Length: 107
Image (tube, rainbow, N blue to C red):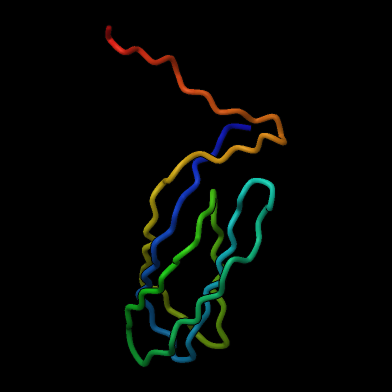
C-alpha cells in the first residue's frame, strides 16, 4: 500500500439554515486504528441562513468522513474545511519504510 500523507485540520465553516439545529459527526482514518469517531460538533439552530465556524484543533488524519444529523430540516448552502499536509505516516510493524529519492547536491 502506498504511503499516505497525514493532514492537520484547522477548522470547518458551514453556511446553513436549520431551525432545529444539527450535528456533524467526524470520523477519522489512521493506519492501524481504522475509521473511528473523533468528535461530534453541534451547530446552533438558525431562523435564516447562518455561517458558523467550528475549530478542529488536534485532528490529524489520513482521511475523514463526515455525517450530518438533525431532528429537523437542514439546508446546507456550502462548507469549507481548512487543513494542511504535515507529513507521511508509515507503520514499521507492517514492513513499511520511507526513503528519499536520489539526492544530487551539485558538487
